[in-house]
Length: 83
Ligand code: SF4
Image (cartoon, rainbow, N blue to C red; front, side, top):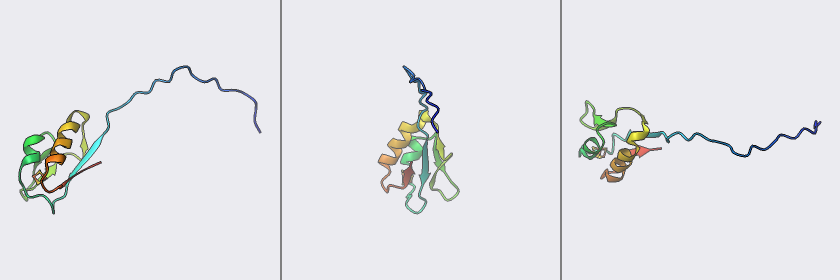
């Protein structure tokens, strides 16, 4: 049953937009340890004990999104997966 009340439409809705959180992961089977991602984006990628690159944190801070994208674009084996 409808009460007949009309919800007023807001004139302006402010939406706070957060930076996209990009997730980064290195496919260990594809990484050939070329070092590009570690040198391009050391804040996110580092070497692991197998001497392959890995993401330090899965969730990438917004200020490092660009360098993660550069590393993923430059990876010669497409080992860096982002979402
Ligand atoms: S750029 Fe790709 S292949 Fe090179 S170290 Fe990073 S993940 Fe491995």
